[in-house]
Amino acid sequence: SLYLSIALPLLEKGAMRKIILLFCMATSFAAAAQASHASPAASLKQLFNTMQSVEARFNQRLKNEQGQVLEQSTGRFMLKKPMKVYWDIEGKDARLIVSDGKKVWDFDKVLEQVIVQDLSKAQMGAPLLLLTGDAKAIDRTFSVQLLATKNTLCSKQSTHCFVLYPKHKEDQSFEKIAIGFKKDQLQEMQLFDPLGQCSEIIFDHLHLNIHLSDALFQFKIPPQVDVLQND
Image (cartoon, rainbow, N blue to C red; front, side):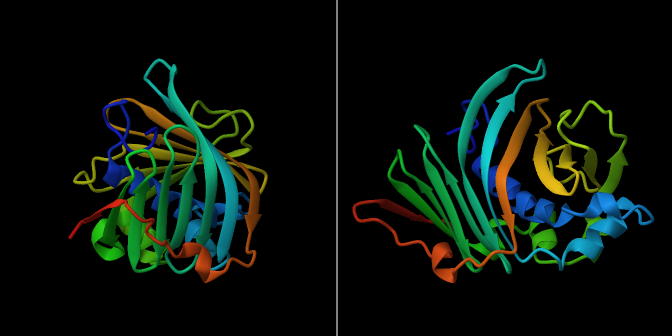
């Protein structure tokens, strides 16, 4: 799987769930570029209450240190506060990750296997705290910078580029995260891991604050599928 297998090589399963939660946090940035008098971290805090739901399509590419594309995938994403996530990876490495706010279902469609875990146990780190809207966690967990328009992290399509650096070294799943915007619309995320690889996620067809039924975030385990309870 493009997202969840180290052997390809890519980020491990726990790290992928963390990426998804980071995306949830990133959607709260949508108007940050317009907050010219506030610090990047302060702008972040002000925006947590503005985004209640999001639906988008994504295209992800994994690049090595030389910028060569190792793998890529496409799919659909939905988020609804509080803590509801739907991340559907399409194609030959099809995978579906769903959270109803209490549990997480990680369904590998190829292996016909689903991992079930309590959300609180699945992600106890900074991304989860950010997703829950704990604004104080931003200052505790990240150093946030706003780069100049021309930079080497975000693409040319992005007119604003935020960079988040983890303050605590015990979280080694990523070294930094770049989040790009085209005016006030989320454009991309770049997640840099300790191996020098970059997981690039490009978003399109982004819809904010639309009605999303809670039923979309309920997962019904298909018959004849292996179920693993990750306690």
